[in-house]
Amino acid sequence: MAELINIQNMYKIYNPGEDEVRALDGVSLKIDEGEFVAIIGHSGSGKSTLMNMIGCLDVPTKGAYFLHGKDVAKMKDDDLAAVRNQEIGFIFQGFNLIANLDAVANVELPLIYRGLGRAPRRRIAKQSLKIVGLEKRAKHKPSEMSGGQQQRVAIARAIAAKPPVILADEPTGNLDSKTTEEIMEILTELHSAGRTVIIITHDDEIAERVNRVIRLKDGKIIEDYINGGKIDG
Ligand SMILES: Nc1ncnc2c1ncn2[C@@H]1O[C@H](COP(=O)(O)OP(=O)(O)OP(=O)(O)O)[C@@H](O)[C@H]1O
Ligand SMILES: [Mg+2]
Figure 1 (spheres, helix red, strand yellow):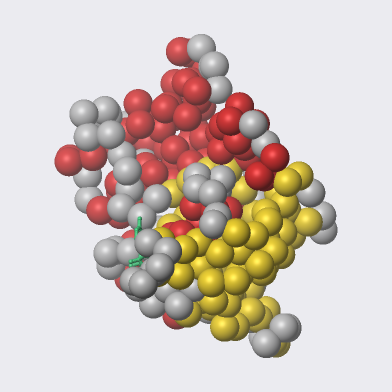
Figure 2 (tube, helix red, strand yellow):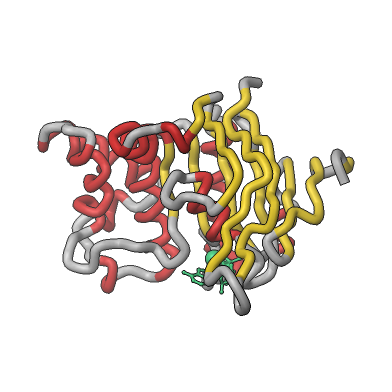
């Protein structure tokens, strides 16, 4: 499979000096297209920071990032916006739905940035809600839905524009075990359909459900293995 992500010796250092925080402390990492990966670690280990780097939402203090072989540091703002909009479907920690928009309008948002007209937008958003089993909730606002349903709207929004990469930060955080199961089934299906799925989680049970596990501690990768057999340490 072709190389998707190549991160080389990346650092993210907050408050450089005495009480500096090394949110990323020399991370090197390669992920190929089509992989199904969990990035796992305790709270504060640097997971969201790494996700922000992978998603081109933040810039590192030091280190290189090649996405599809292209140096992200050399990309212009327009290129970065295009990557974020067309390449990656984000599912954020705590759903980030717009409170005063109903489900279908929330799912339509990334399609607006793609310049799609109203009718195709609505059609695609409805299809997307159907994939996550929420077609009957299209007119409900986030406050009128359960946590699991809100998370499914967030997934529908992430997949609406059919991005090849799904980047999900704690997609099952704060959900009960049955809903967690449903969300994992959706993410597993997206991977089976050919997408690269990267899940950020603190949950070891989620890590058992993916193909590759990358464990972070204090901003460093301390483990990287294929489920069923270790690769590099
Ligand atoms: N803007 C910031 N300024 C200073 N420190 C920060 C900032 N953002 C994050 N950090 C610190 O960087 C470290 C990594 O944070 P990060 O959000 O990546 O952790 P995480 O693994 O996602 O944790 P959680 O599981 O709680 O979401 C933490 O120690 C955090 O306090
Ligand atoms: Mg986090």
